[in-house]
Image 1 (cartoon, rainbow, N blue to C red):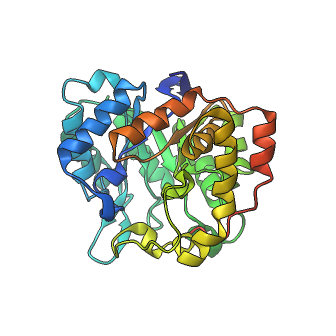
Image 2 (spheres, rainbow, N blue to C red):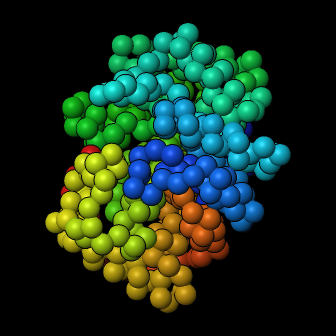
Length: 330
């Protein structure tokens, strides 16, 4: 697999990453025993994937424990990305950007991941009660202390953008401009896919101009772009998709033309719709790294193979002509 670089520190990672969250959180209808997830991580590493993406809130905490167990004896093969700054309660998820908390959260992640250093430590969400510069300054101290190699920031969601006014990623770009004055940003993680391409017009140009990597979250549209989901199939109550406007029966049916278009391109290449969706993300720039979630070994291997799929101009034009996805972001 080809390697791509993140940030001015030129951190090298495999072109396609592995999102570990679905193995233990968020998609409960398909959660599995830990040994199967360990096998999935190993399959991804064997296929050339290096970037493993997790967070302390996934579970909470269980996803980091799983990744730490999977990397016993294989830590040198992986580029570990985790996140801090969000607390999961019974009813709400709240941000905590206090410097003292950031330091404790990082130490706890190091223990769960069973590692001496985190390759990329990301601020999951800025705390509205704490100046983001203070939070970022505490994170920078973690780099100085040798606990973290580089820092990243997760983009704010559509709900935040609507509340603050302006474009989808305007708030994230403002945060990036502020923290960049404190310590360099190596990567930004934001949703980017065929059916959610908004980052291409706003956030990606900011990253490209500064050599900042973009980790494309949900590049398979939470599974929709794989073509394996049936409109109206339903999801368990604690599956995140059960509350997502794009996963109602009506919207899943309305967005079938997007999947049909990916299938047409896939047939020409002897590929799958998921691989075409990932190849499209890879074509958005040399510092863009899709991070698809996967629970099964076969899916991790299939996703990694997308790095070898090169879409030509006709493919890209056909995808560009697909109808815009219907349904809001969140």
